[in-house]
Image (cartoon, rainbow, N blue to C red; front, side):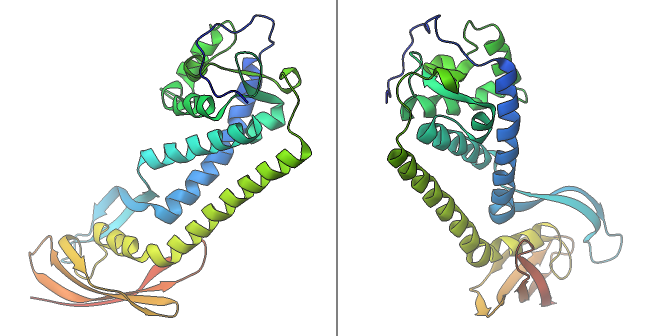
Length: 274
């Protein structure tokens, strides 16, 4: 398996995948990536207010608002790059490419190495500009071998699976690589479950503060103390300053575990202000 990045022009004898085949593959892959990113957003993301109407009452909170729960774009891109790189590095294709029947190779038509695969997928950030891989598609359209920017830099091609040079993976090698993939999936799933239960409560408290759901309404600042766990509930002592009146408040907020996919929700909150 070659890991070198080459700048040589691809041999004209190698048949490359059509843009239509690559388009179908990326649509399928983006569906899978969207599911992975939705899980990451739901488990690790913070609530962000997208639109809100202030409550005209004395509480100073929101009478209605819309929000989204998300992480920073960097982590969503990291997840996408990891998905493409892991599958292409292990098997030469992704789920979408496998269903369409195309693979990633080096310029000689041999399976691409890990370094080349990682480089081509890091450049997806550029190829996807300004949306749905428009820049990459334009570059590939006018490239002799349908190479997007990432392919040019990494020295890779996307070809029909039947033209890949050299023997395919042996049954034993494929089993090992499938085992590696399953181990990554299990580790990712276990991490999400563990964080959703043990790591997310402080994020929920922070969401309540930013959405004006503390007793008394929006806060200028707040702090919470150590958690008290009691089975499927957790209680945090809090001190905060109301944004509207400047009053200093102290109290407690109790969260209760509602199971997946709901997770932690506020159960009760008490405070005194002065």
